[in-house]
Length: 137
Image (cartoon, rainbow, N blue to C red; front, side):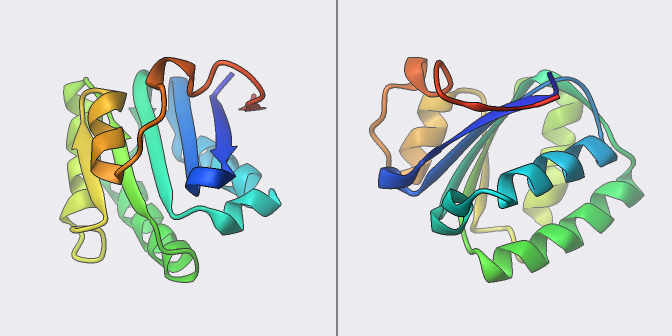
């Protein structure tokens, strides 16, 4: 499994968690899978938990990906909380955050609870991805 994710339409939230080695093609595949769901068009908040992932992405790939994310988020604006605890993943997340478009939309946290506070949500974090989630292999 590369990722699992779940939509919370009542909160306009997408929660996703990534696992193992994740390359740029994996990131693209995951986003494409998510955008196929009608619920995707209703979200305005995302939590991306990358603590269990090793992102294998070059700076060039990441910059190209940021450009694509910008286009997607212009059509579907949202606030984005990235949860990470590894130096490499934190550094890559900081590159996203430093982009002027994402500066006020993206924050980086070490826990899902902190991410939920940033997004102004009060959901039980221990139950976020425990059932009825989608899987990307």
